[in-house]
Figure (tube, rainbow, N blue to C red):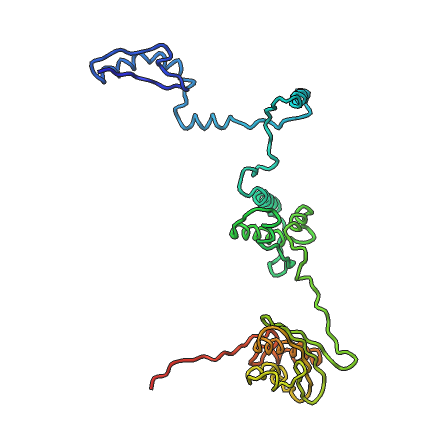
Length: 322
């Protein structure tokens, strides 16, 4: 039986080292003789053999990336001039971002930047969440379009949590770098800062109210009168055939016992009759509050919520057994 023994040491074969073994009678005898013959060689090469995990870790820790290339160095300027003559330049380009080779480099860079700011200014006092300035952050789709990357919803919401924590820093103590970081993720228009345009009773005694429901929209002018209602130039009973729609249209007047005190002239469009009636409910309620602002609690306490045009009570059905 012929047995050849090879020992790999950094890609070097014992056979290449000039050592070979001849035929032996058994595998055990051959192994013992090989160990005695290779002992001097093993002791000689022991410092250069990586056989443990600790040794590998030490070697990996010593590896460092090359420094960025200075293209203004005379050596590289000469190589660039050679490249103009048709020769190749082998240069190592250093990415500007540490997450350059990831799937979402812009998102990861922003996330790491926010985490660094959160850790750096974690000692600054925070205000309660209810007292912090209300901010409308960019939606997920807006942020995707801005950075041009596909981002998971859960990861983006985690970043929003970091932004909300930074936004709770006391305004007088908030650093400028935090303010500039928050501005990057805010919407262009903050809906929480919109000021509602005040509505007044005009010179003719009319108050205008606007209402929307699904695809329907309504504009209602309410003026003091005898209780007449015109919708698109038609009477209430002529425009709405269903009794439920008629009651919904003038419910704010009925809930506040003002049916015979005000006249209503309305223009409605879009959607179906039920949507138009519910849009008209909201429009009439808003115009009525212009005349009498104190009616707002009464409208909210009504069976039908005229402020938001959402029914509070619904008909429920159940089975009965005789």
